[in-house]
Length: 328
Image 1 (cartoon, one colour):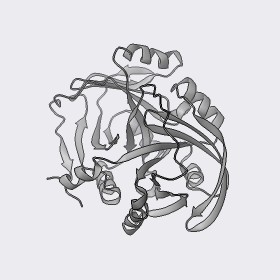
Image 2: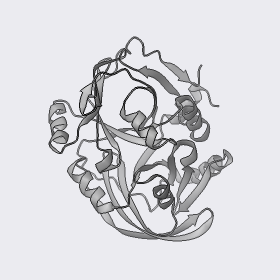
Image 3: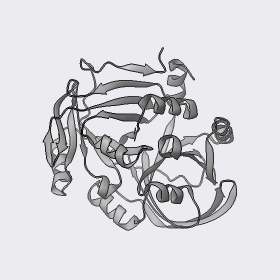
Image 4: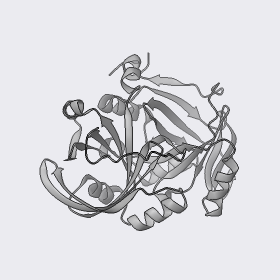
């Protein structure tokens, strides 16, 4: 396993450009993303292509709708015909966030693929300078690597709206095992792991039987900053919470939510927007000075939305008791 110092250097300048959400109804999914998530679509239509799946040529068609949230493209895919990684994911897990994509320099693309394959990753699909690795059994996810010159990449709009996806979460059963998998397979780490419970969270509210309560609960939280995206891990330990609910439905774990920071002065307005559409807060609180809440959007969007207030973490609370993987 790489050391902390080596991992910090490896992760510092990495770039993620796309998150894929697979669905069996792209039109309903898109309508919900536009109305609830206030997503702006930049392209949509039926796409077709020829690639390799498990090393064999495969033709496919799919509905594909794309739109940027800051520097990361959110892509909705509904498989129509053919065998693809996304069709296999949908068949196994159902609709939801399925794939995170990393951009690599063109002259390193082949080297990256060989490196990952040498570690035992399954190269499930490849097309036009984009490779999709199967980590469904290990983490409940797909992970893609794309050449910076691939025609499958879309240009980020010149005029951004100020929004940004700052974090993607993997909810898992064993946070230490998941951390080590991400480090050993993808060089994503290190992880600072801490305890989230009624001691470390203030202004707590967890929805239980339709009401925001303050029950006994705990989950472990692991955090890594990897280039332009935070990779967060959460493992529920005890008590009612949305992460325990997710793991009860999906023991393999997977991508559970996306986070964005709400601009200064727009917190109440943003919460009201979700409330007006019937989206409840399923958990909220503060860790130190940082406020956050999760909106119960999984049924409509295929993932939970986490909102953060953008206040910098200046001091961790007593009882958080952080430790690192790898330890050093």
